[in-house]
Length: 179
Image (cartoon, rainbow, N blue to C red):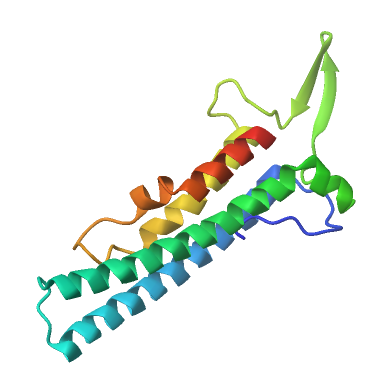
């Protein structure tokens, strides 16, 4: 998963954790881009070896099949990362594995109010907060899909298919519920 919590790891600042996350995302994007180029090359080589028209129904069915394999691969990868986020915030998983807090959070009492640093939600919404950070992770998971162009068109990606996939919807709802 792109975000994971190591058992026994000490709490760290949200900024440090997010920096490591961005590094992992960058490496994953490069791997997906390279893998996408290979898949495109294999499909092109198959077309040339078979000398089949790209308009033939059998060829379109083949490309559709390969596209579905790619989509399921993206879904599996993103699902693993979403499940990792769920495990980070699930109180039962935390208690069962005796995990330490993920982030360092400071709590202060000011004018009879408890103030958390970093806050869960910030005002204005663009200020750093736990929710904004987690939303960024989720965005990064799905952005990885854009590193590989579609096989069935000359442009675009598989974002629509991934976002509308039932498993993605369920896991996003679970993450939202845990937060």
